[in-house]
Length: 315
Ligand code: UD2
Image 1: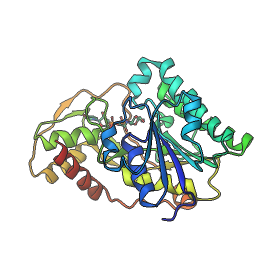
Image 2: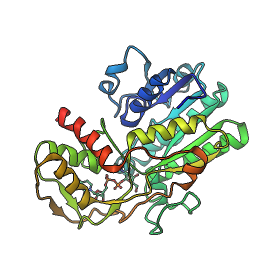
Image 3: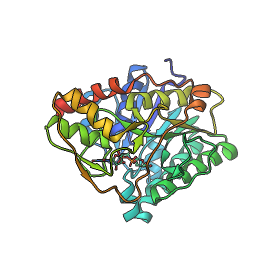
């Protein structure tokens, strides 16, 4: 892929997805600046490229810092956020300061500094528990957590900054992202990161409910690809795209595949379903295919193997 820009800022660039975007941008020959307050991001995610990027430890709530970091940038990839749904439930106001106001400050920085485009990381959480599948971008959102409301608010602001101020904004609604560097340490971490850690240390995982609930798991490098396309493709400004694979896998089957990969069959421990857990999630990615030219490269098994290799080394 040849990017249409040379200078980019990644907010939340020390995080799981942001650090992979940094890798890809460097491979494209871009100049990369990262702004991260290291609340959940880690410098270890950037260790291998630390001499090739400009890193600022700072917060997106600090408009001056944002302006400084965004100087000369043509594109901002905005990933900095409170990403834990339970944390936003616990702290709706504090998380809104980051996810709502912080995001607004990112768009405002783009407007004031004439940054051409902002790619905003949103979430399939905006769909809530609407049983209709697959999820299409035109469906009426049903946010069920502060996190979902905050992401939806970000999308509305993105649209406003496009229509009112001409900032080229593109929103990406990620489905369940997985891959190397995803932090498995919290009970609310992504299920694949938790299962990988369990498999690597030959422990039994918990499966909440009967394990027939399913998710559309998308490999982090495909999410990176979607970000680069969203930063470059014309006629995508002001729009929202689902980023998934269009395929769903049950949690029970997920554990079976991981066991086969790990070469040891460990029975999971079944627990009551999590309150508020949705049964099925599946993305319709036709819009992303048609307008972004997004086609996932990683078949599920390939993505899982790459991920397992990483956890095996890390564990
Ligand atoms: C994802 C997002 C969340 C929000 C939500 C919106 C992640 C990590 N979370 O939550 O931020 O956007 O979608 O719908 O991407 N599970 C187990 N055992 C475990 C952990 C999980 O059985 O140890 C189950 C869990 O009950 C759920 C499924 O695995 O049914 C996926 O869980 P998750 O936390 O990875 O992601 P999800 O879809 O609940």
